[in-house]
Length: 150
Image: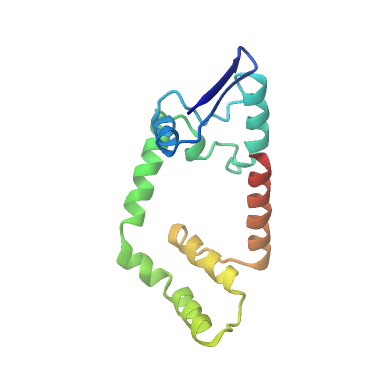
């Protein structure tokens, strides 16, 4: 059962507990992920907290663009196309796959396994991605910040 609260110009919230309601709300064209900073007080506050989800040049990440945004659709299509080449991707991450297999067999490798996993995932998107302790720490900090914003 959904609970809705609306205070014009300040907030419009819906609490959903039923999984089918959550799916329906997510698929609704009314639900926006806009980081424009427009809208009520709560929307502006959320947009400020999520400002970290912008590219270095200030552009909004595609996942936070409105669903009808042509750039979001284009980038989603490009990503789906790139990730469909599984044979190429498996070759690209073969060194990390081998390192993780060694870790599973022996219990140790020359790098922390969480950094190997981060590098493996990063290389699915950027062939030359190199994970480090700093990049792992940054990802953890980002994850902590996102969790706190909820």
